[in-house]
Amino acid sequence: MTNSAIAANGLRKSYGDKTVLDGIDLAVPEGTVFALLGPNGAGKTTAVKILSTLITADGGQAQVAGHDVAAHPQAVRAAIGVTGQFSAVDGLITGEENMLLMADLHHLPKQEGRRVAAELLERFDLVEAAKKPASTYSGGMKRRLDIAMTLVGNPRIIFLDEPTTGLDPRSRHNMWGIIRELVTGGVTVFLTTQYLEEADELADRIAVLNDGKIAAEGSAEELKRLIPGGHIRLRFTDPDAYASAATALREAARDDEALSLQIPSDGSQRELRSILDWLDSEGIEADELTVHTPDLDDVFFALTGPANVSDKTGLPKQPNQPKESVR
Image 1 (cartoon, helix red, strand yellow):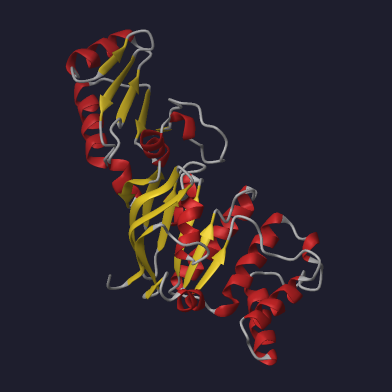
Image 2: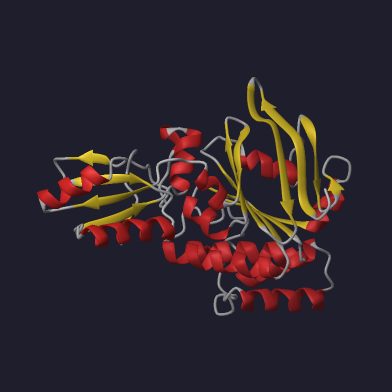
């Protein structure tokens, strides 16, 4: 596929009688972030391993950087970098020594290897820690060093398999900044994650993998539009105002006990303004107005089922948890 950094058609992989990938298609344009979402065991890591030539597919075809992963694995490996779920950092040696080791593995001349290592250590804010054993690094520092090591070979395509798992919120946001910088420099990033906010923040396109199949694919906004349930909620303290509004807004769902009305809405500025203008024209004052629009939590919940839903912290999410913003 033209201008695709990664293209896959009908990828299949089974382990024994368990089908992990059941004929998936992927297309990742150059210089973008593609996020693959899915619950544990959905096949995200298996897809990464196939595309990065670590394992072979049982069926289908894939091209990475214009090279067939099965026919020309060495050419693919020369074009990519991979940061797995578990850090490849050697804790027994220093950060600088880890970088120089990667430079040797890429067969860089000694002087060039030192230059590249120094530049990357500075870029990832690891200069002060460079002479310390990597075992003394925090989780965020190890992750930064891991990605810095991945970049020694100057790859144009990087696979990041759940790169922020276990990081605190500050370290996670720092990692997002690094990923954005990479893409600004023209790098293509294939990201797997269970953090829905992460995909929403970073990805140009998102695919949801469930039971070995792509359940849905598109931009974050396109995926959100797949899920119904957007609404505007009006709450009143004056029973008369509530009764007047309920009589006029016949399409609204009533909650007489809470004195609230729920009006189906896509949450657009136009619809919100229309309701506010109507309230003003009728002299009705709502005490509270909240807007609910579906988010990636809703998408994930709808496509993968309640047992697989995680909230933005990675902890189990309670079904039907409201996500409303007060206006």
